[in-house]
Image 1 (cartoon, rainbow, N blue to C red):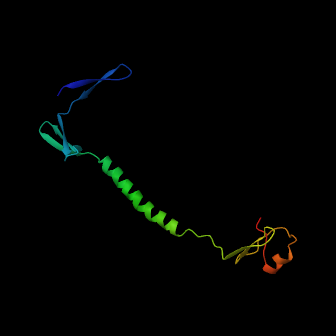
Image 2: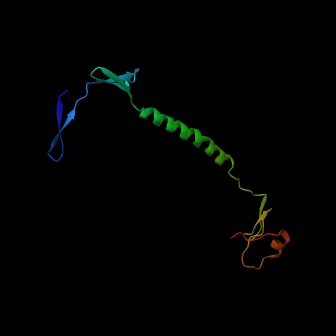
Image 3: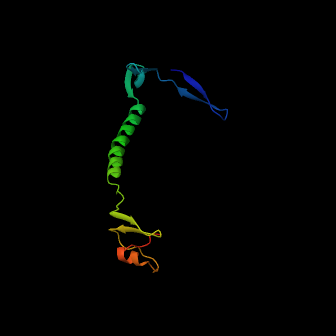
Length: 122
């Protein structure tokens, strides 16, 4: 076999030995390379090539398989707004029955707010 000159960016050349024949093995209608047959004199070797497209497809399917149930679980477990009973009194007072008393500074409340046990929201 003859050495073939190879050029470098620095302007130097070095010799590389050419190793016989390389034959790609293609698959189906997609004509995707699945391997190479490397012939070196009297010996032929099989050199498989990685299937990058298949790995990407597998990653997408795996991510969707994990993300779909997690998303559905998160959507179903989302707490709904809890309002037992809402009533509005005169003067803008709103009464939410079934909730704890909001903390805040003590304010004077009208008599009807005491009667309904209503507290100011804002």
